[in-house]
Length: 134
Image (cartoon, rainbow, N blue to C red; front, side, top):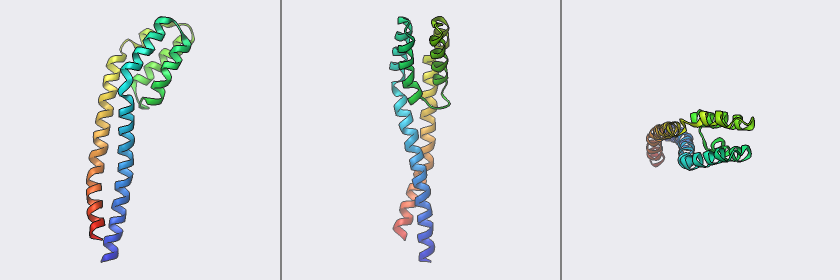
């Protein structure tokens, strides 16, 4: 019986660990994206200056901090490509709805983080109880 309890505790702790790592990753992505409005302003300033190099630099932040499925990241990517071709008006059209996209992306990241932690907490509690029992 002791072996069974220990085995169940080990499996539970392992699952809890995996879920906690996933939730922590979601939290890091969410927190990293909080500065998106500031970087959006920097991107627009680079567009206003007409500098493809500066827009590419400003876009790197979105590539590194945006969620892979982010609309913000896609809009910035399209706008950056347009600036590389000298199409600054087209780039502005790609990012004109960016503040709304940033809000949607932040809301999605908040939801995904909440869901990840909601899945992790029960396993953490049960894992701790299982360790105490074994």
